[in-house]
Length: 92
Image (tube, rainbow, N blue to C red; front, side, top):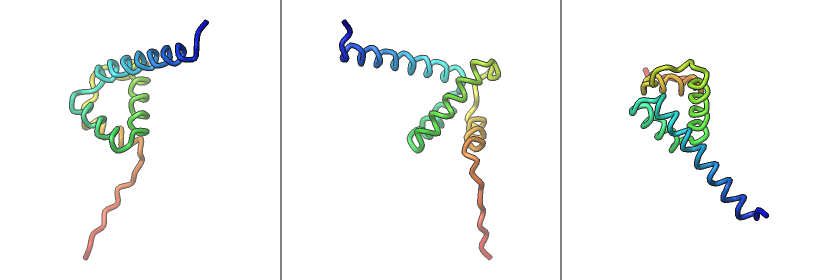
């Protein structure tokens, strides 16, 4: 008989395994600079960081990402995903 406590422990173990696999895949598809940038994004916007991670894993599994993503390319990806417009104000 499996108790509720045992089920919770199994779920936690599964979550740890998934997180470890995710870290491994991200380590393969991001350079050190890009990993640092993503860590900074996670601090500011955890939902966006999660979205980027899932996207990168998906692209990697489909074979579209063959070499590690640099910090600049990750920056471009973040701009694309957030779709923020850059507004410049010039004072005269």
